Length: 135
Image: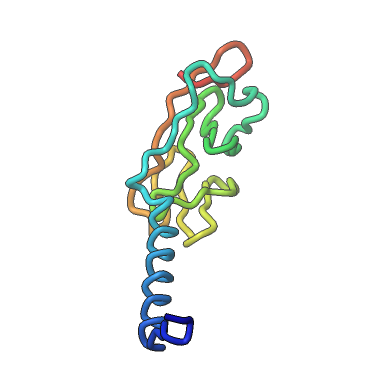
């Protein structure tokens, strides 16, 4: 039996390629979904100096968003958007913004504009000296 004897109909090849592409698309879309658990930083890990988190704004440190809505009140959230799992990438004008579909969150993690319908997941932090550390 030679190579010439192994003929695969064109429709079979095209259908197989389509199924493979669909499976890859589903895997890519689900890899960051809200059903996958986000890893919390280990307890006691220093995230940032308190001086680096502006009052009325915040900073993004890796996969954690640190905010200071009012002086001395530090909050932390997962940087994973609750819509499809993209990482938020900007804090401006009192909102935490996701670049993927335009969701915006307040400095308290609450949804300001969708399509996200759930707030950002809180991360427990505390101030230790002049640093914000995971609790």
